[in-house]
Length: 411
Image (cartoon, rainbow, N blue to C red; front, side, top):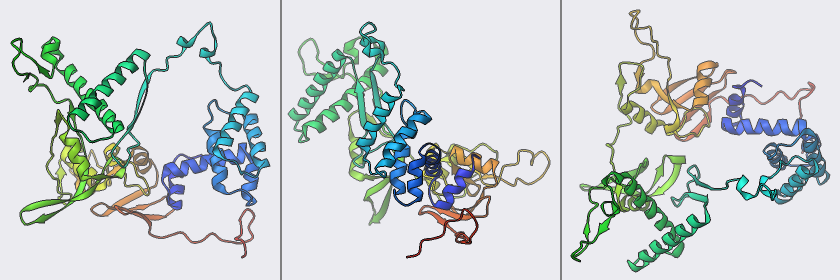
């Protein structure tokens, strides 16, 4: 299957390239490895979403299913016309793996090898799944002694917060304590060259028993907050008033102004405020390389990859010259057709950058942050901050008697 055909299918359907790729994968799985269920979908006996959930499970089975094993799952699911829940499907998958002997040997099950054959220790922070409350999920498996020490330290810090007057719940205080431990440890490591526990302690007492003094005022900041958030602001007299909610660039999530204030107010936090960038200014660079000031402006303007329906954050994208930069123009005395200028730059994720470069897709910027795309088959789309709009929706399919064309059902 041609690599770039997926992007045009997604654009026509109004979905992202990733979603179109998943749709094609489900269709191929159903057609070739789950044919009974596929037949029921075509007959209208099973909703497409149910069949796709089965295909998603069989595609990502671990260990992978053989064709015969997938056929067994197909026969069982088709027997109940696809009416099977996820829990039942998981049990069926486990039974299939056992029936066809697909599971690999578990070293931990061998008493001679023992549990030391596998090291389960890990610490995982899911940075891609930010909760609307501004939290991240953390999961860990630690050595028993480490886990008990951590639990005691977290309980101690939570109790200290209570003694200092905190009204937070126990769970919230324990979570905050874990963050405090992380910041303290970072500061200690950065200051290790001072030598000795006394020099690295946040507070120490003198030998004469005098009042404790702070010896760590010159410690490097233990935490640097890097936040790209956008808030509406208005003027009330001579005072700037910010709106209570804003948008975080990380996943386009909603953030509260109070959350930003609390993050910046935590102990030993370094806060760097960047100057406001005028998104309407025309910035230019003399060479092909894009300076940081122009890159920042284009990322703030576009917010995401500007390909139709793509939602990848702009800060993880390439900066593309809409009209290609000619590296030989200056040497040959010709004007530069694709200058490094704000109105000739746009954010494209790596896949869509390759697609624009190596296929017949092309686009233009009609206004700051507004792009018009044309696909290899002539479909046109407008992409702006509100999303993607088809400029010339394709004509409805020809409903003739040609073989392979499905006719709409009569009411």
